[in-house]
Length: 340
Image 1 (cartoon, rainbow, N blue to C red):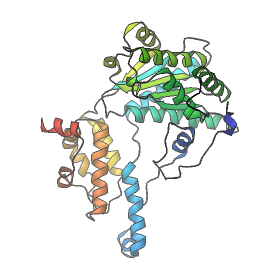
Image 2 (spheres, rainbow, N blue to C red):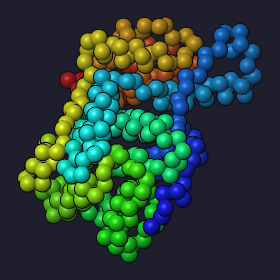
Image 3 (cartoon, one colour):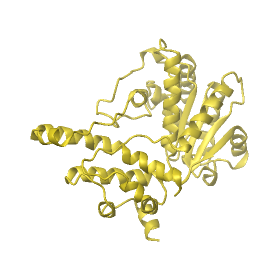
């Protein structure tokens, strides 16, 4: 078994921000350490004085910023962070029957963002409280593979920790190794994304669910699941589903509204843009249009605004308008809903 003290750490991904894989320890630590900042916007005379190479580098910084924008602390993100921390405190001294949390909702409603921000919050707090504990791994983040089997679930845990695996690895040995590293490294939160890939109606899916339950019993951590319409996916059906329903609370994600919160979300995104000719308040004034285009799905809204901002830098217009937004094709689901 690999000791947690020898697991790799990194100050940032080799490929730059956004290129890391949070389902590995190295990638997760890079995500947690990543501090996104808003680049400055040069005044007109300073902009005109840039050489072509300097202008290219300046534009590249703005393009990178618009490609990701800042995470907006929506009411759902705040709710998930609060509930996750409450459950963590509740479970801290529990010997058995620890409680968990499920994030459920349609696609593009920000479930993964909520899950990752919860994990980042917990990890940052843990590092602040234990600054000398370099070997601690307080948060584990993994995704459930399609048609998951017990071995696939166990291997996802092992892959996160960087444990050596071969095709001949025995699942019992892998389970013991994962539990051992988790205990030694003070793991307190385990985030499991794409939980809808577990099909309790199949033998493998049911056994994979049992594997997660086994980990939950052996590892003194809070488990948080996220998935698309978990209730309809069958995760809560049958005896196994009843056990999950009896231990997990649920937060449902959905479209953002047309009211003040939706406008505040758009205003925050607009304030973070770095375009030289954009008129402040333009996007807030188009709040109804943006809601219609995205069907209220925050994932689609972010895609639309990011693409528009990137296009404004690339074509030199340096502004987002209704016309430029109209020219951007969105995901099929949003476009179909907008036409209806």
